Length: 450
Image (cartoon, rainbow, N blue to C red; front, side, top):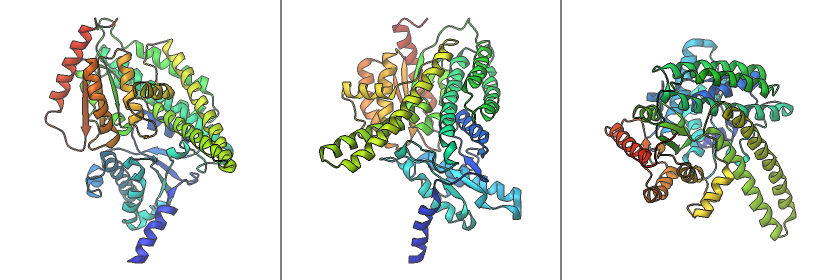
């Protein structure tokens, strides 16, 4: 029994981490549909066989091999990888070899169960015998999701830039969807158009991403936006704007949140969801912030060796953050010259809001650092309501709710918590309908929107 424990701990060390992806099938879970597909296409442009797994088809498996104490995304992603492996075994028969795959499951440091997903899933996979040979590729927020070690050293920087660019473009396509769909000429036109556009951008990233020909990618994005604008019916009047914050997986995974954006739109909303780029920027910003703190502390204690290490990290994270902000600004500037999409939040500005209003602290970490000031910014941008989307019992989002509810009440802005697990709450749609009634009333009180 003692030896089994040693083997399990050794497995966590040897089979979870960064692995070279050459000659492997890189399995990416679908969180945000567009983002996952553009990221996979970017990896394929670098010669890596990346594939987005079907999601929620193996939810029964995920629930069978979890206890229910884990948050909902853990159940979904556990089911996704088990289902995929099951189907590959059926498809390949005796030729099936788990060593040919690397399953992508990043992690976060700090007080969030997400940091334990890949460890728990490692234990589950090891219990299936030969699936113990399936590696789990993990990137961490601790180093800003560095890609070192998964591809040749000389190509890491190019892959990181192209991957980040794919995230920004995916955000734009999502925001284009939410901008057009409430005003579409015929029901279903926008979903069909965005699905087609996603596949166009997949081919574009595969072709141009590895050479960093970002202008050609933006040219194609412009064509998509111009075509998308033709779907809008100019006769439909403006609708109340609803901002969404919350846990990154739940708010972007339409199956997990039971397509909450479409339900809000059904009752007359125009929705803007917090972006994936915002989270990536936050991890870089947080790394820079921690490095600054470490540098100052070690300098005060005359520990010059550690101070130099923190200074190197400051420079690395600082350059990375400047690049991300410049690239994001470039994309939004070009896009907003064609259509009025909501700009993304700057993480530094969000921390300033928290400090000025004395609401929270970035020292605590987690998505609450983004959600709380994000809600305040939605209020300043005259949104007509805010929805907090998160897994049932999620600590960061529960903190967000506790802090923001009184604030929204004071500002007179409708606010709604929508926690999710695998069940469907019987009063869910009634709650959303009531919330949207309040949002319409707020919209009228503020004189509508041109």
